Amino acid sequence: MDVETFRRAAHAAVDEICDHYLSMRDKPVTAQVKPGFLTDALPDAAPSSGQDWSRINEDFHSLVMPGMTQWQHPKFMAYYPANVSFEGILGDMWAAALTNPGFNWICSPSVTELELKMMDWMAEAFHLDPAFKQRGGPQSKGGGLIFGSASEATLTVAIAARDRALRHLTAASGQIEPSREWAAEATGKLVMYGSTETHSVGSKAAQILGLRFRALPVTLQNRLALRGDTLAAAIKEDVSAGLVPFMVCATLGTTSTSAVDALDEIASAAIMPTKVVDADVAVHDHLDGSTNGANGNSTDCARSESLPPIWLHVDAAYAGPALCLPEIRTKYQKELSALNAKFDSISLNMHKWGLVNFDCSPLWVKDRAQLAASLTVTPEYLKTTAAANDPSVLDLRNYQISLGRRFRSLKVWFVLRSHGIEGLRQHLRDDILLAERFKRLIEDEGDPWQLVEFNFALLVIRLKPASTDADPDSRTRALWAALEKRNDELLLTQTSIPGAGFCIRIALGCPRTQERDVDDAFAVLKLAAT
Ligand code: PLP
Image (cartoon, rainbow, N blue to C red; front, side):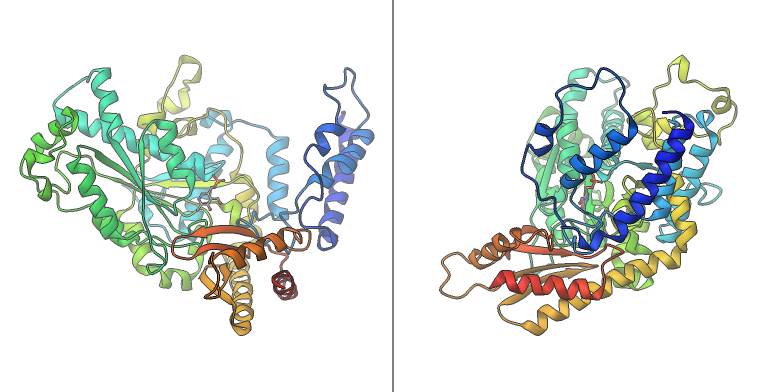
């Protein structure tokens, strides 16, 4: 395609995209296709000679578009929202046009510097402690970068946390260069904690790294938040069993119910008084495989001086952007104070509720050297004079797994400038108000509708079982089956909740959703229930 053909094709595509948005409301929410519809329609190999763009575009509309679920539809209330803004689309258009894997500062200084600036802008907007900022003060060691997903961000943090723990254990054991066997054994004892409600970002990171993940129980009475006493008991038990707690993956806004873990209690439980009878014996016990705990005195041995500090991470993938709302910061004041004072890292997804289109997962750490210690590998061809001569030059490849990186900060800059923080606040508040409207509709209807949880802009509901129901979930499951047949009109997600059983989630957050969509959605629910 030459530049003039591109100009015409791109102008036409922008027109088509605008029409797509203008007619979104009339489209079915989900793709109305059968498995294999596209596989069967497309040839088994690429064409041997190039084809005309008009034909390709025609096939895109007739073959591919019917198989698209409309995540931007006002009645897409499933999973969590995947916000798009036109400013974000423009950012991605330019990023694609400039394609520029800015792994080193020198590869494109703007890619690195805009990203670091946007990380500080977002840290400021979300009231993160200055310690999380790149330019948080003269002694600042913090900062972060933008990943493609919360999963990637969590895996990266887990690598740094694992290595920090191993360095600590190595130093405590008095070894300079531990044997491979010793390191493998020590790694095998590391435990990451989360709750049963933690997204698989935690367990998956542990699984990839060959580490243990312990999913701790939560209760509906505690609004499904991981509590400090549960964590403290687990740490104590594991230390007594010779294991080494190294990381907590806490959540601010879990996937099922948007629960907020008790970050204050978690911080206290993980940073417990570290007195133990004989710290050195404790570490040797750990690595020798003793299950007695420190010197056999396991009851006092909650944490040992010689055990590594536990890395505290918060996954705020969905709810993170809401930290720009003063009312949310007031509501979760205890948790957020602990996050700012005690936690090592936080990640969130601007690509869920933050108006920036996929992908955009910022991760902040208080000590970016911890990431660099694990992820810096510099063969000759990656060395640069700029980085060698100037310590303020950061090469972002040293803080992530991949080498190349997308120019994600451009869309963040476009979105934050065009909307302003007030615009972002308005978007979030509109969604929370719509969720409150939905809540009122459910509460006004009363029996058998039951509101199980309501956090941020997420509602979790079920139908109350009758005393004669053999299976307390049967009514909600039947409702779900009926809703699945109406997913062209409304798309929701099912979940299962400790203490409540099978439930249905309603996630508001699409910028095009209006009050009438909420009313229509409840009407669909009621119809399905009959
Ligand atoms: N964390 C939470 C709480 C989520 O709800 C989700 C996705 O819904 C994720 C993490 C995963 O996000 P990503 O797709 O960016 O890895």
